Length: 324
Image (cartoon, rainbow, N blue to C red; front, side):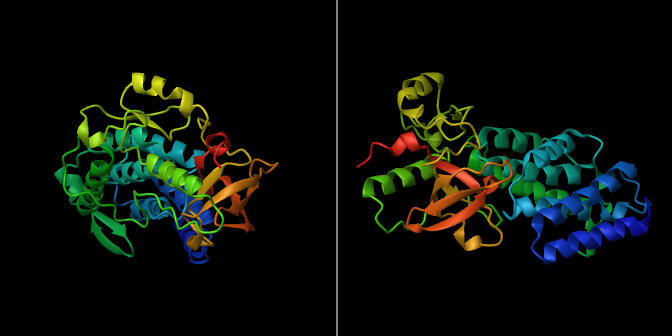
């Protein structure tokens, strides 16, 4: 590994980011980080790859933390493996934990996000590591300051997700909200369907039991999501069983969007103004990496083709087929 190889990777990553090719840019940053992480013994500041370690990791994870990309299977594998790697310095693992927890929540995997954040809260940084100089955003800072910033953000995010976490005022300093966006519907959509879509979007927050309605703030029990669809939350197995007759209509596996499904758009880069809008699946792609053909619920004559990573299920067809 030479300095020129590392610099070329960094230049490619920056160029792709500047041209809004975020997936290509994130892959380059990831490749750069993997090269430096493998070659550099932790805390060896004299290695040619050391200055780029945190810089490249921050570049890779920033696309997920700032809601420009949704993590795919390869991203999750990498983030989980890195989180478990105790040889990585704590300021890097803290950033990885922050990113992994947020990415899990974006995919409605709320319970897993809480576990990752709790694990991240168990990290600590020694004084000798805290004082290490780290390259970040074109300048120099310390590993301790980066650790503290990300650690504090993890605490605030955890407060949103876990009522038992008694930390400071919660806040998500990113371009994404913990409250779902459902825009004004308009058009000829029935009021009953509008209400059902709004209810489905709020339900995905996981703030109350979908059967008895008890709020997570009013119970000592942690709400658990349905392991199959990750869209419904229950305070115990009895509530989940009692709700099954109603819930089974919409209990679809993750990333399963049959024709007629009502979905919410998310993570769109080229047309961010469409994020949060609701649409109906009209056609399913034949290829695995193809695009779904959708029509907006507030403008049925307008069609859009969207990748599966940019869809979040709100309602399965069976959940609203009997509405007037």
